[in-house]
Length: 191
Length: 126
Image 1 (cartoon, helix red, strand yellow):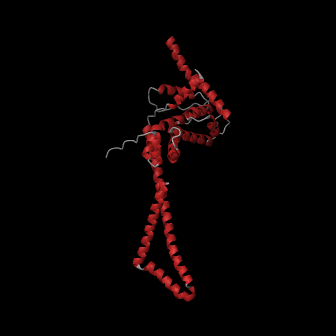
Image 2 (cartoon, rainbow over the protein chains, first blue to last red):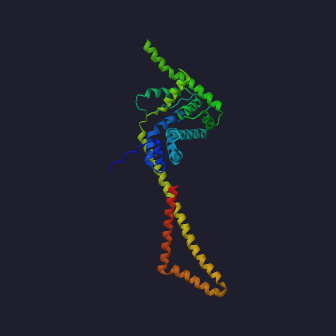
Image 3 (cartoon, each protein chain N blue to C red):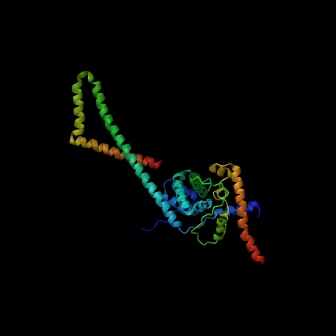
């Protein structure tokens, strides 16, 4: 007996099949989007083990709720929102001091391959380490999980102005960090 | 760099998912969890269906017994004792005659199985 080929089709079609109980179709969605969810959770500040546990929980929860996904947005965005909410729930439960100004050393994002985009990803992940927990969380929610400032404020239970100021400070730091390699390259080219 | 350009660049960087060497393992773990959850769900649905079936069968049998009692009450003015004895004898004959008893219990068992099957299918459809 030959191995079954993986289901094909658009995410919305696969999600519709998964809503009918087709676990193979959902497995294909997991295969397509697992890395994005695992990466987002790390960028939000979770360590590798926690990020992977939460990513698994997010996909399990996603299967239970997949009938609610109607294709208004992308499946990746939808499942990332579930994952981000799970992470925020965990962070709240552990009562961490997220919005302190201390910059905590973040864990290296492990197990990456050496693709052509690796350099830019390393830049982003390195740059994110320079942000405080609050800045990192707000920037990653708004740019990585595609949340609005209002959604982030509501989920974090903080004023929207606080989210905006954390995002702005975070962007300033990221701009400075990400601009540096370009400046270095320019200097090398001129030198 | 202008702000919108930088934000677009940032969005693009965030949209590029990192590649994980252990991706197949992760996918397999999610699949295993889904299978476990599905098996538990089926077990729960099957259990619930069996309980519902047993309850239904019990209700059918009690209704049959109640009907006999009601019949006895209606005829109570005549010969209560004789009717009661006849009713009890009838119930006993139904339950104790080998062929009849087998038929009743077989019907009850089939009702349990049918109800369990029906409830399982209905819940799965939901």
